Length: 216
Image 1: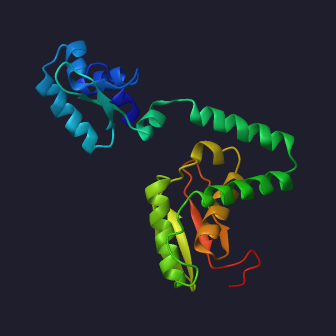
Image 2: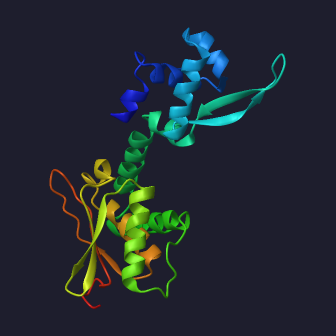
Image 3: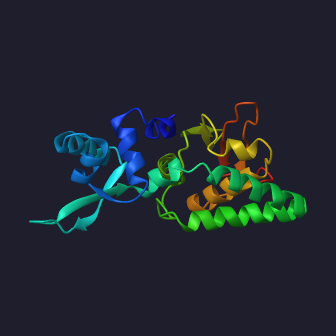
């Protein structure tokens, strides 16, 4: 929905996004191209900066003084691309088809560890387990678009989601959950076991603090 909104050529915001996809522009350049006043463009740019859509990109020499240029943020550039999910889906499909199940699970575990290496560990390994679990849950919500909440269950912790950020993949390849399981385990520094709901509307669920054999 947000992608469609940003690509809506009938709105001023959508027309600004279309211009900035071609490269950085000054407010005056955008005003000329869109046949709007500079004041109207600057008001839109201010709002789009606040919303994380546009950022300052540099300066361009002008007749009397340099003019500020603006560009789309990296997050919005990625959001506007429709190539990421189809390419990732094909990579996972090819890997699952070519590898033995054990090899594919190992690949997913390594992918989870690699993903964890790109995150700042939210709490030290000697912090209480409850602190580590809550911090990792907040990190996943902020960085991966998850909707995780922490629950207590029989002396352990559940990271339970109200959806799945990888639903397009897990619907066909449930072992993709192993990557997230390993990601969480690496960050929280405790055993983690996936117990996801893979119904037509999948929901994440990870048991923290219990090994595969059931021991705490």
